[in-house]
Image 1 (cartoon, helix red, strand yellow):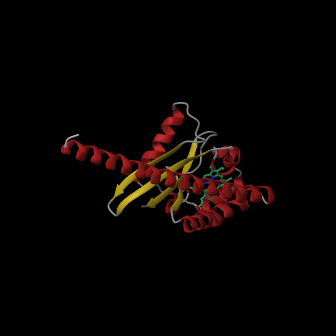
Image 2: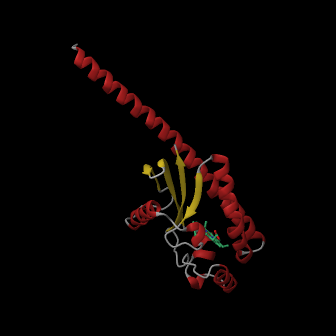
Image 3: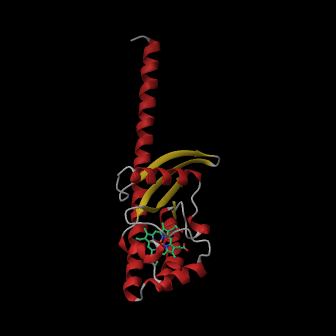
Length: 193
Ligand code: HEC
């Protein structure tokens, strides 16, 4: 083998090796993101269902307002990743407004559901170069299931008590008129690496 060729092979091997390393790193980040997303979904659901059964949807709004941000910030602290919930039509604009990348992914989720895919299980991940550095980003769709209708469904299915409280707590609420199976929003995970 000529000297030149050996160098080339060595370079190719090194490139292949670092690609494999990068892939392993991404796989680890993907696993961590999935775990964090599942944690949020199950913790929010159990809090919500507990309150819905105990006191009904009006009081459960308080759970969404106070417990969910606490759950997301606890999980962010524990995992070292920024974990949030976002939506194209958010109820809470301060917390739920998506950035440009998240908007693009949410639109893609909606298009995929419009073409017949199930919202449950839709996810996406990507390594993104941001001005502040390289980040791993992950999103998982949150589908509209039965209990969500109580507070995010068509207005004729939302009780008057819930409507009144939503109007006072969230005057710029856009998160109603969703039907079963639609994408209500997504969990979004982001980590610099
Ligand atoms: C008891 C009423 C209630 C129920 C039931 C409910 N939500 Fe919400 N949801 C809210 C409230 C209130 C907020 C705003 C929370 C806040 O202030 O951050 C919210 C916010 C959200 C957000 C964050 C983005 C945004 O719009 O601000 C997502 C995503 C979401 N809900 C999805 C769901 C899904 C999926 C279900 C069903 C599993 C569900 N919700 C059931 C009341 C409810």
